[in-house]
Length: 207
Image (tube, rainbow, N blue to C red; front, side):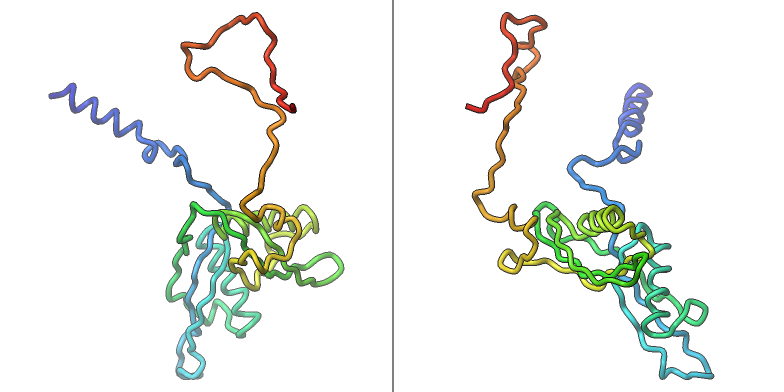
């Protein structure tokens, strides 16, 4: 009995979910999409006329940053600040089909050293979260713009007929092929593995 109980406890201890190991087959990204719902607190001074409920989709690393970005946009667009408002609900939005690759369009605005600029970018990925994470890295590398200086106006999936960027159209179609100029042929199992062979390995298959 004790031996069986000990073996079960060891099996539970070695589980990937318990040990913190990353799950296989899942693409982890830095930014997540959150749906934040908030409003201005009803008061006797203003009544309920200005207590409209606002819903906004925000990309952030966690819920705390998502709330902060929500109040940033609320203060700029609706003149409602955190001291006079309240968060009603915050939920993370997940992708419906994270196994399929799609083209995502991102309409964004960023602040540079010289002024404000509007931009449209396209990325091919398995989810909008990965596309947004790639966009933040791309803008930081090309335009030296930080996370706090980038405002995402709109996101959406772009059909193949409406794709604009040349870097994206190269990957469309059913006849996309990439040459394998350097391949290392390995044995199918350890049984056929050899330490020394008579011929030098051949890795180039151009012809």
